[in-house]
Amino acid sequence: MRTHLCGTLRSEDVGTRATVCGWVAKRREHGEHLAFIDLRDHTGIVQCVVPGTVDVRSEYVVAVEGEVRLRPAGTTNPDLPTGEVELHDCTVTVLNAAEPPPFPVDDRVDVDEVIRLKHRFVDLRRPTMQANLRLRAKVNSSLRAAMDRQGFLEVETPLLWAPTPEGAREFAVPSRLHHGSCYVLPQSPQLAKQLLMVAGVDRYYQVARCLRDEDLRADRQFEFSQLDIEASFVTQEDVLSFVSEAVLDAAEAATGQRPGPVPTMTWAEAMDRYGTDKPDIRFAMELVDLTAVFATTEFRAFSAPCVKAIVLDGGAGLSRSRLDALTDRAKALGAKGLAWFKVTQNEDGVTGIESPVAKFLSDDEQSGLVAATGATVGDLILTVADDYRLTCHVLGALRLELGGRPVSEGPYAYLWVVDFPMFDGVDDAGNPVAAHHPFTMPHPEDIDRLESDPASVRSQAYDLVLNGWELGSGSVRVHRADIQARIFSVLGISDEEAASRFGFLLGAFRFGAPPHAGFAVGLDRLVAIFAGEDNIREVIAFPKTQSGWDPMTDAPKPLAAGALRDLGLQPIPKLD
Image 1: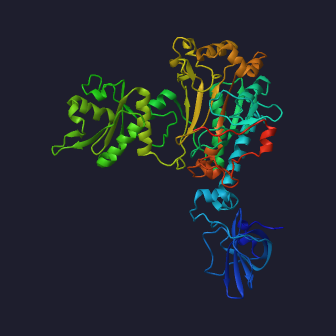
Image 2 (image 1 turned 180 degrees about the vertical axis):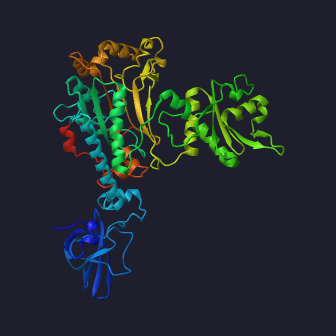
Image 3 (image 1 turned 120 degrees about the vertical axis):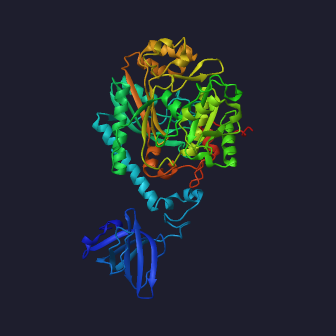
């Protein structure tokens, strides 16, 4: 139906006849003898000159045939790639009429998100959304090429699966043939890909669809896509290399520039310096340990296991109301309070501090505070004293609020975070809780302390972070029955429970499981950052709202009585 795409016509096409198809972006008439149509498809817009009048409206679907000519002098449009040319003496064929769109198909118009999602089929015509979807396809293609090049085999795993031990709430699918039983939609292909390693696939990958029934936010949807990989006879360093190669290929495909090598940081260092296991390393404002400075303090608020601070350059000018707001924020995050200190200088040029609590500190403590933080005149020091985890958490959050920038804003700062704790807290029965999942291999240097000091055991788990967003996580897996049994015992999982929950995997391991490790990269987050978006909904064709609602289809909806009956289900009133 067409010989050219709208956005591809250039001066070298002058003199040829072209047929283009698309949607009417704009129509302008000059009296009764001339009309102009801006015609749009996914490649861009071209101006079409029609003799006489033409009966079309915005978003009509039309085919236009005409001769490519240079625009008259003084009428070129430098804002359009096709701005030097136009189609002349055009004939217009209406392929489909259209009702007026609910909002202009224009990136310059701000539209309520619910209205956009209700009419997503119109919203996706906007140039930015078209670009985002095509960027996503380009990233997917580059990731697949990188995995193919590194010897990985693409294998599809089931969407109807059994419950998995990954911690998130799952979507259940009631069975029509087996009343009272359910499949679940996979949180990830975790167990399936480990079975593929037992099966000798050696190196697996998949652009996988995953589903988790979790609260939605800017970087989370019920449905998401990930580059999922697993490999046999590899080390942690091998996996980091595989993934880095793929992600840097994707960055080059998306931006035209290849980032440098991805640095590595241990979990302990990330928490100590940035207060989070997914640090944004695009800016400094690192946490400073002041515990030694206040080791013998008589100020009760600083008599805590850990005292840390951050420094806001030039922050001494913050108003008292802003400082009070920061204190309230620290308390909301769990801190007992927030001590602030403005670094000042008197008329004699002597550096000092101004703070409501300065009078409770000795001269040595005041000078030690300034020296340890490296603060200079005009800076603001914010200090929290509590247990280590809480202190780091509160200051890490304040650091992002005071110095952070949009996640999509350059430069792209990748970081591998390694050596995560094997366990994270305890359950109601006093048993340690797996920080990752129970199939993560302990760090070889710590495995002897599994039973005696589980809180000190590191795992061979690792995360990839980009601009403060966790792109994905992975680990070296347990493949030995003796180590798996010890981990289950520490977690308080009996042999019977292990057989019930993970029997098919453990049974497969008895037939020869190779050492293996894997990872998964969140594609929605990766593409959103490349696209300059701070919300993954902008790079997903048909997302849900933050409440989990689809305004376009009005899903979720009740099932008809007959469908419920076939599934052996009966609705019950919602409990308050």
